[in-house]
Length: 324
Image 1 (cartoon, rainbow, N blue to C red):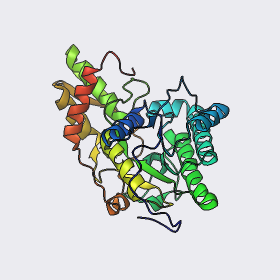
Image 2: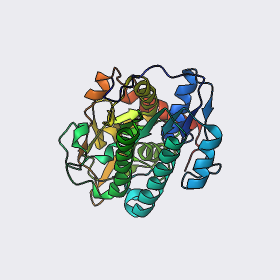
Image 3: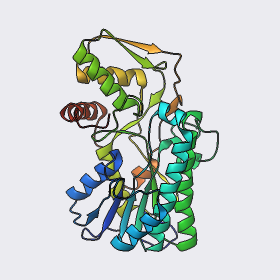
Image 4: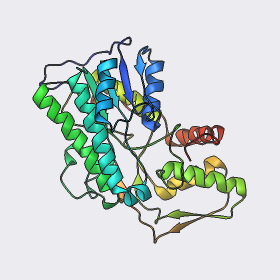
């Protein structure tokens, strides 16, 4: 699938330098694993200690030295409702600087194909469901994560501007709620899936009689295993070229209450589940329309129950070393 740039997507050169920005995070590490499985032999990654992407001079020096042909921009400051609501300046400032520095350096040093990773929180809080790509900028954002969303929207616009001004075939992908190995399981900074896994696993270990979750449990959410997301990223790089961001998801959703039940079953928790309705629910529903992704020839393959079980197993195997 291509648009008017005249570029035709094709199989990427497995021997070309490929920089995965954020290769130690949830999304970046999955992209790295998938690229290794697919035979890429010149992967480039730097930890935040090795390269601070907020440091413009350092980023330009890195690109000048390494000259990647391909880039997956998965580096970002991320967090759940509590973190986003508490530190909006950090989420806006850090993500804008990361994006601008990497995208400007990539353009300066001739990156051929670049994939920018965003988030489904870019869409209006009350967008029609399922959410289509053209819902962008048609309504008010969810207030608890609007700063992060604005930064990601700026990234999408940056990609579109590069396409218009420089004719480069760069693209954007907007994943739904992601989960899997490498996630952030901290009580203060995690998203709903890892937060529930940690909460229920610890409750099962301790024999806690009641687990209390935030909100009413009624909001509906779509969840995509991060290994599926990684596969979709490579598929888009090799099969899609368009100015519109592409939604990446499963096309199905569950209530948070249903999700909590699935997690409790996966960890073997048998106590009671209660809900603290004084805490915010966030967006009432967020289901993505994945027609554009389907038209590009890709659909998810990891079912939710299977994905939760494997993530619980990974969490338990890595309990002492995970981000907590």
